[in-house]
Image 1 (cartoon, helix red, strand yellow):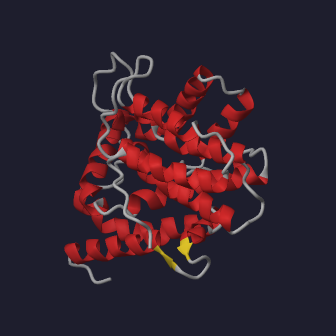
Image 2: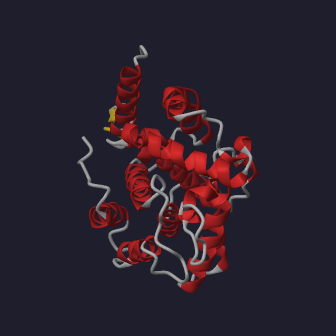
Amino acid sequence: MVPPIDTTQPLAVQAEVQKAYAAMFPHGNRDFVSQVFGWVNACFAGEYRDYLPIDARYHDLEHTLQGTLCMARLLQARHKAKAQPPIDQRLVELGIIAILLHDTGYLKQRGDDTGTGAKYTLTHVDRSVEFAATLMSDHGYYERDIASVQRMIRCTGVNVKLDAIAFESEAEKVTGFGLGTADLLGQMAAEDYVEKLPILYAEFAESARYTKDKAKGGGFFNSVEDLMQKTPMFWDKYVRAKISNDFLGLYQFLSDPYPNGHNWYIDRIEHNMTRLQRELGVSA
């Protein structure tokens, strides 16, 4: 049973990530988790360079924390299972940085007064990659580590060609795929995922207006109802295939006990899909 964590509270998530990190690396950097959480909290609060506080309502700080918590749990469980290849302390730290920064592309800069950060839906991965380079450079990271984080962030692109990402190693690829897995599972397993679907639709609609190209901007949903009706199929036909095949089935490390126990994230998502279908009056 996964203990309930309030993902609206950064300190609560930080404490869980710290526990996972310490379990993997008892002699690791005690200050690492608190430092990187401090950086990201500042970024989303508008306290970094000339960036404004996040105003995207779905891809907000909580969304990032949901994914980060899931990834820390996945990496810890994989480490405990002694899976190969092993992911060392450096890559775990870079993976945590990567998921904390993976949606910083939704941040706007001062003087950007039109709309919300949701207008950058189409380009947010590229913008997140650029943001990561700036922030990590400011904190003294070497180019090799920055490039690693950038490759991991690219794993979150909806239509990304994963085989085109030139990973430095198999371990780096697994870490990136863990990020992609956690990004999907963390949000879809949230207790209020169904309630947030209208907010997600509003972001897609804003993106479409901003790009003036519905096909490219995310306007492929005609309405909130259309998005909600298609979400169970999105889970069944896209996400399940993605996490099982493209992302190497890494989600299975979240099963407790591993490998055949209950998977809290999958169970929660199935519950959300059943609830959504019930509310829409559609039989499961």
